[in-house]
Image (cartoon, rainbow, N blue to C red; front, side, top):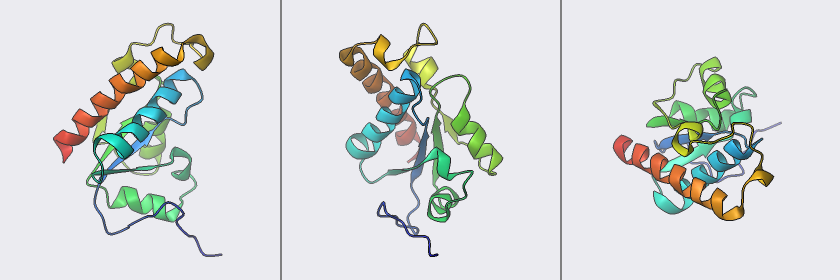
Length: 140
């Protein structure tokens, strides 16, 4: 079986690669949405991302993104830092960690998506996206 890229992968480009939380709780949802905001709205053409679950599965074209990365920015949602641990287990070190939990000052820690309004979530996403954007600009 041949592995294919379904996300328009360009293996020759060296970009800042973003790795977000997978989004299990509100922290992760904010992380994931902020990363997409940065990629598709804030710094077009300078970044790309990998799915965190592709890392331990050794999905070739996504691992190639990491290998060819200009830099790697991890955006963990909570203090567990699953995305950082997945990167490290695969032999990659994040250049920068932009911790959603710290940037957004989540309280209480156990918030679920239903615990906050849509407007509050959007504000948190925008705040985190700005922090990620600043990190990307410094690395570009």
